[in-house]
Structures are given as structure tokens and as C-alpha cells.
Length: 374
Image (tube, rainbow, N blue to C red; front, side, top):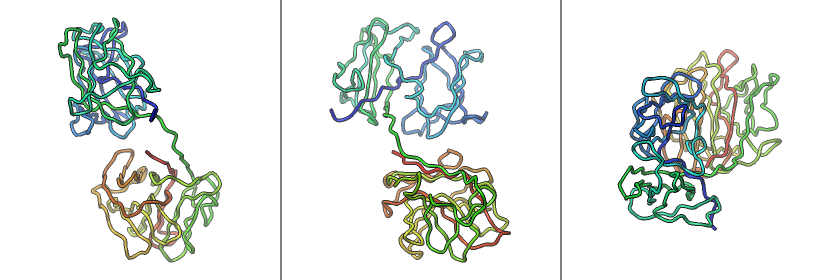
């Protein structure tokens, strides 16, 4: 067997009232986790068609929903707006809602006894196998005949999109949902540094520096207070820090901004501390928009990949992610730019500080995090 299979998320999210009756005509409200700020969810796997907020549930109390790369809170009400259920910090619909077996309903909200589920490659009519358990040893029939309780155990090849076509026992169409996929949870290495230690002109032994530069601890944060040249720091294989895979992200939080427009700092990925400038990094310049740059092995080869319309603010959590050739810039867990570049293939996550300044002109960042990503 080539790989473990992953439990299928339900093709549509299903909600019920206190008596386990499908919540026909109910509403799903979606928010940025921990806030009352509405957050977009989508009608398609490409995340190009947003749902209205709230999402109106159908007669079966269901809705086909896809979410972005963020944390959500869900609030569910009945058709009259009465609270029914809530879900916090939702990052994966499969993790939150997948069950074994999945249960299917007809248009009247009854269990779909003897119903038929056809499974295809996404966007096609080419049959695509599903499996009875995570081992992948037994392939489901296609169509899958549901039990008298409208149930079926369905596992998918991870990260492969499927189309589900649900019909009743007489082969009458109930719905089609395209773009269903599931992933297996994989443990990726991560490391953090909150900088909560005494002021010092070095960050400590868990960090590697370009020679003759000083990225320092000041007021339990990281800043640049030494030397007269540009500086780079990167997280390396010392103490509790391992060598990161090439797919990685780096994250910082801006705790204070400078009184001067020149000081610049930000997270960096695929950094090679052997060179003064090497890697992809974010410029979080006070009073200026976020931008993403890349540097080769010398200062002269830098290029601006994007300058956004978003201005850095105190409290912003800034994340730069690279996977393969795709780079993503997120501010407060919301993607504000995605692009591609293939020039820099390896390196370590870290931080980059640029431009000399004195104690009167400094920026402080906090809560550094580095993670491997898929």
C-alpha cells in the first residue's frame, strides 16, 4: 500500500437541533477566532466564491463549506436566530466534522436508507476509489450503497480532490459536491523564542549571525542595536533547534515601531547565515507598506517580489511562508499576498533587521516562531 488513507470530511456540513433533527433553514455564522469579526468561508475548494455570512442551511440542515488558512469560530442558530451550537478555533473541517461512518439524509431530513454515493475525480466523471478504513486495504464499491441508517465508512487518498454525487435508492439525484479532500495530520518541527530574558547584545546560542552584526534583546523583545552594517539572523541547529526542511515559515509580532522611517525588520525564510544577504524576507518598515524581497549571495542581487497596500501596525503578527516555489505573506493569519519564485531552494527560518540606528530609533519584535510546513 502506498500510503495511509484519511477519513473523508462530510461533503456538506450538517447541523441538528437539540432533538437531533436536521436544522432545516438554520444559519451558520463564521468569525475570526476569538473575535466578533466576520470571516469569509467559501462555496468552492478554490476559495474563489464566498458564502454570504451567515450561511443559510438547506432543508437537510446542511451547507457545502470550505475555509481558508485561518482560525475560525462558528456559531449555529435555528431559522429564528436562536443559538443552537458553537465551535471555536476551527482550522480544519475534516478534523472538526469528519466522522466514521458518515451519515447522509434525504431532502426531508430522513436517514438516506439504501442511498447511493458515486465518487469521481474532481471536476470529472472518472470514477475514483475510496476506502473502508485508514489502511486502504479494502476499496469501497462505486457507487457506495448506504446502510439502512444512511451510513458509509469513507476514507480518501490524502490531498486528492474528489467529486461526490449523492442519489437516493431509486437513483434520484440529491446533490453533487466537488472538491472534497482530506489530509493526514503530519508532525512538523516547530520552534519558538519569546525573548523574555535579560537585555543583551546577542539573542543567544540558539541563533546564528552574520559576522559583525548585533540583533539584540531589549525590553524582552528582539531589536537591532549594534554595528553600522545591515544585519541578518537565522535560526540554526543549536540547542533545541533542528535543521528545518525547505518548506517552512517564520513569524514575528511587531511590539513597537521606530520613531524614524528607515529601521526595518521582519521574518525571513530560507536564510543562509554564511552570506550577508541570502533568503526571502519581509520588510516591516514603520509607516511604509509591507513588502517581500529576496536576496541571493550578495547585496547586489536583491529583488522586490511585492509591495503590498497594507501598512505595518503595532500588534501585527507577520508570517512569511514558503512551500516549494510558493511564498505566502500573512498578517494576523490572513493572507495578503501569494507569489512564486524558484531562486532560493534551501535555508533556515529567521529574522532580518536592516539599517543602522541608535537607541532613539529602534523597532522591537516579539514572539518569534519557526515551523516546518507541508
